[in-house]
Amino acid sequence: MSLYQAIAFLAGGLVFFVFGLENVNRSIGRLSGAYLKVALNLLTSNRIAGAAVGAVSSFLLASTSAATVLFAGMGDTGLLTLRQALPVMLGAAVGTTLTVQIIAFDVGNWAVFIIVAGFLFRHFAGRQYWRDAGRAVFGLGLVFYGIAMMKNGVQTATNTASLDSIRSSLATLSFNPFYLFLLGIVLTAILQSSAITMALAFAFLANDPLAVRVAVPIALGASVGTCSAGLISGIASRPIGRQIAVGHFVMKLLGASFFMLILGPFTHTAQIWSERLGTSSNMRVIANANTLFSLLYCVIFLPLVPVVEQLVLSLVRGEKLPAPLEHFSLSDLDDAPGAVRKAHAQTARLGRTVLKMLRQVQTAFLVDAGQVVDEMKHSYAILDTCDTVLSDFLRRIDEGDLSSEDNHARSLLLYYVRDIRYIGDVAIKQLLPLAVTKSRKGLDFSIEGAQQFERYHRLIADDFCEVLDHLEGLPADLKTVLSHAHSVDAMRSAIGRSHVMRVSRGVTADIDTSRILLDAVASLRAVHYYICDMINLASDKN
Image (cartoon, rainbow, N blue to C red; front, side, top):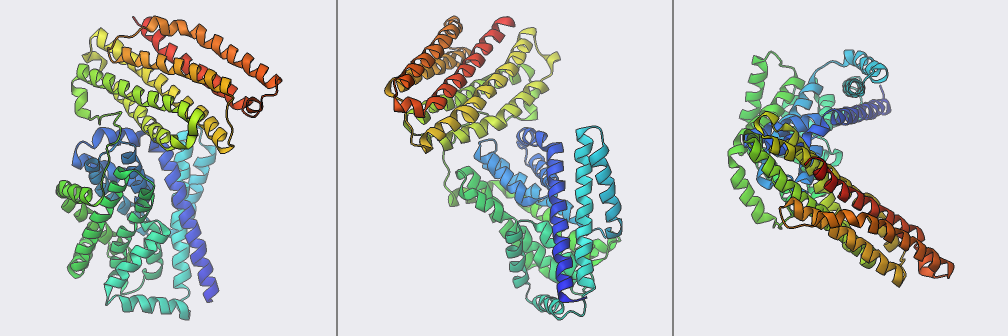
């Protein structure tokens, strides 16, 4: 086989591998993604439980890099603290080794049958759940086929001078494993996947007598290289997101460096372990060494989380973030009435976050959307995660342990969380894009139009504030808020008539902003509908 044919096999196999891995990632994400945020919030109050959640999440995502970005993003939205996130990141390292263990199985001859089985499930299963599962199996078959294709390209090109040169260079570097360690870091940082790095190592070194000596330092370097995605995403994150990314990097660098210092004994231990398991092939030994490193790394650093936290805080300064949601744990459910009270308080706090978004809408329209767009998106990210966690927490409360009054309150809170989410959706998905369009085009409302919009917006925001005051037990006039429904409709009609009259007079500002103003007013009317719905729900259930 010529060099060009070998390269074609390697490139084609790599494409199949990456495409298959993406299919596995997306499919399993659809199957389990709805539960990851809830599980993270409920289980991360305990380090061991947090590590377990991290391991499962990383395995389901099929990528430590993706897991790092996810956890850093959740910290960025206030859902995870640094101390909670560090054990999760330790567990994520273990979860990814399961992916490497799977791809280390020499099942290339069965890959086509796995692909066909996945294809049949994907296209002929009745339920979406089984179609997603079929897509995951289909992707897994492509992963195995890609590895087999790369190995075939390398093994059948044994007389190709260029490939022999690569093997010779790797063999030479085995006497200076530090360079192999750096190679693993750089290659994984470029490919953004330690699984791809290990797949290439398997392809090149499957039958090489020096495979283990060469691949183990590469695997250690790859574990550090996976931190690159988190560090890159941390650049645009808030300090807590950067702290999580840096904490992950510090632990990986220290852990991998320690095992590089004891590389000989560590590799020998992995070989003995593999022999006792009856799996002494090069690929199995390399995969087992990778798993052994991650397990020991997790065990070593789990008790040191508070120390690492202090080190990271000294390296990356934090900031006080809004905390609309305290971290729930499963133990909170033991006291059902107390759980309802805690959920009540957090619902009110979540409402205040959305009220802040709603008030920022006025700044976005009348001053400059650029001043508030980032903060509004950050607040919505909090809402996006917290409403799922809060609703799940409320549904988990055992009704049998509640009085009729507390059970009524629990049911009402579920509706409140829903309407608060709807209001946030209107603010971020309808009102903010209109304000951004207005700012980007350099448009301005007419003076009269701006004044009408400001009064209309202020009435609706103040009514939402009244409802939240009532939710927090403060004095509130809900009857007046309900009576404003007619005023809101009348004001909307008046704004429309005034706008048409100004356009007929040729007021340029109103002509240019016609659609934006009327769409914004209609969206604010929808917000008031949800505000009144919260009041009516409370009245209906009393």
